[in-house]
Each structure stands twice: as structure tokens, then as C-alpha cells.
Length: 187
Figure (cartoon, helix red, strand yellow):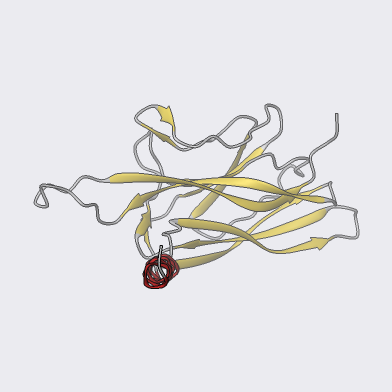
């Protein structure tokens, strides 16, 4: 390949890189730890927030099986009754799931260890349109050390490309991401 061929090839690579960096992926929903506080009684309090991007809505608890939700997996040693959430939201715990589903099938494959509680946040209030940032979620644990854990989310896409725009179809979207969680017990 001659000098001009190399320049052309590099130019194509440069243009592709510009295109790739200029378009950010839709997050749907992103859960993050705002702060973690070590309490005098030896527990640690995790304060969370979620960001909902402009392309989705977070529907309130409606008809099963597809409510919108976010789940923080393997949140070990939770202090019973310590969960707090903003008005219009509820936290629940389960030792298996809740994993986003579509058509009766799991659409995410997080590491979900049986017997270790998962925290699931869902909306009890009216549907929330993105963009939005919601703070005020917290929970205590007896574990001080942390690891990088996982969360999963399911939201409703606002607009969907369809061949029949006069009959839009509501589409659920599932995502998985990383979040700070308590260190898991060693075997």
C-alpha cells in the first residue's frame, strides 16, 4: 500500500473514531453510590441515586410481569428494616432475582448468588419521564469492605422505531452495570 493508501486508511480510522466517540450509548438507567458512611455502631450506610436518561420512562408498578425496576445484586449482610427510599418508590429484598425479563426469559445474566439478598427498587408513584436524577435511597450493612458488584435495570423505551408508527409498541429495555457493594463472604 502506497503513502496515499495509508493516509486514506488512517483517515477512515480517524473518521470512524470520531463518529464512535461523538455518539454516547443510551444508559437507560444508571444506579450509583453517592456516598458510603461508616457508622459508630459498626455498620456501613450506602446512599444511592439513580439517573434516568431522556430516552426512557420508569413506569410505576403496573400489571405483571414487566414492571420497571432496578436490582442491586448480592448486597450481603443487610440490616433488616434499614432500607430508605424517596416518596413514590419502594425497596424490596429477595435472595434470588429480581432479574429483568422479556417474554418470560431472563434478558440479563448477572452474577446472582443464591441466599445473598438483592435490593430491588421499583416505582409506586406515577410514571417518571427521563431525564431525571433521584436521590434518597439508602440501606445499611454490617460489612465494611467493598467490591465492585452488579446492578440490573428494566425500563420502558419512550419511542421505538417501528414500521407502523400509528400503532407504536411499548418496548422494555434491560441493562446491566457495575456498582459498589459490600464484600461477599469468603467460602
